[in-house]
Amino acid sequence: MIQAMPFVPGQVQGTLSRHGPVSGPEPVILLLHHDEVLALEQMPAGLVVVGGAPLSHPMTQLQSLGLPTVIISRRQAAELKPGMQVLLDGEAGSIRLATGEGFSAALPDAGLQPATPTRTADGALVELRASITGEAGAADARRVGAAAVGMVRTEYLTPPHGRMPDVGFYRKAFAAICQAAAPLPVTFRLLDISVDKKPPWLGEMQGMTGLLGLQGSRLFGVRPVSTVLQAQLAALETVSRDYPLRVLMPYVASPEEFRYWRIRVRAWLPDRVEIAAMAETPAAALAMPEWRRSGTRVSLGCNDLMQCLFGADRDIPEVAGYLDPYSPTLFRFLALVAEGAGEHLDKVQLCGLLQQMPGVLSVLLGLGFRNFSTSTRLIPSLARVVHATRLAEAEQLASAVLEAGDSVSVRELLGLPSESRPVTPWQGSL
Image (cartoon, rainbow, N blue to C red; front, side, top):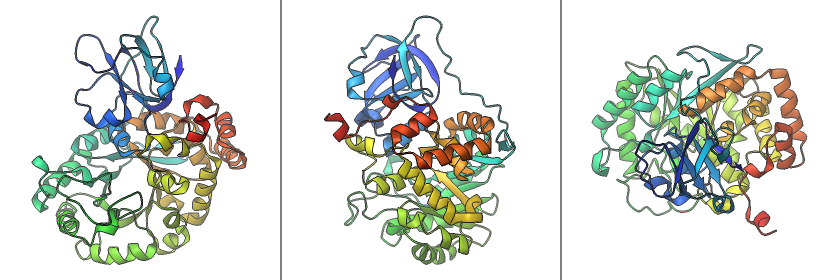
């Protein structure tokens, strides 16, 4: 058995293949490298990604496909040969030779029903919201029992042939999403463009380079982004007449910057549309006391937050090991954020891949977080964790994690195998 990094839950038995074809009478599990993810054209039964950076944008998009997926190292890949019959478990992160009856690849059933609250074993309410990109994701969110659509990634909504979106395009797209999600409330994240998420209608732009360059709201005053943003806002004003929705402003570095753009965004939107902030840097996250005083809802973008905190680009596989979701330093930072939010913590939403990592959701619940936006595919498995969690035990676990000396100790506390994490360059040199 190979102990891989879990990525997308689901179980499947199939034949390992390097290049396909993936269609046929027998299920195929595709073995591909991280830089091949965006070129995936046919949908296999499962995926094994070699050298993947789990927090990268390509892997985030891959997650929305809902295919059982694990991430392995190049060393582990050498043990796998095309033609092998294997059992892949995307939740446990295991790959093993098939010896008998296989798995079912069906969507995990957590017993959720639309509009039914998700509660811990001792009755605490937890909201599992869906992060989506379009109409199909909105329909899936309602089907699996999501509490809401926590975030629509509007930067991925693009007209055919890469044309620049206009008001008419966005009105149709936004209304279709709201209709598919109804009666769930929907939060639309305004254009969140960055150097690694450039839409086809945007050309080269000075200052839009590197990890910490122009991105998110920093581009709102620059053409042609400002033109497309105004089209989004005009469309949202129209759609808000018929559906409950919020607006999320991406990558704001401080409450001052948020207030500046909120005034300008509010000129387009009525008071019935709440405007929230997305905190994706340590400075914005640690400004929780000020967010609390202003009553602003905040979404913590944990993927970008972690790359700032650990000083490693989340899109580079070679440094993926530094973005350690089991680092006690990360949880101490989140404990500071929760403390700063105080009674406002019920207005804080955690976004990104952190809560999906095995064992992590229970720790986050123990720290006091109650609202999470994640891939629709993950909601049933996360709901099972919530249903089995007792808050007193989760709080004790969180306290132990905060006292841990390193991530190995955290993994031991959570009962996880140490070999399922990416290796950092300094570890690989030993």
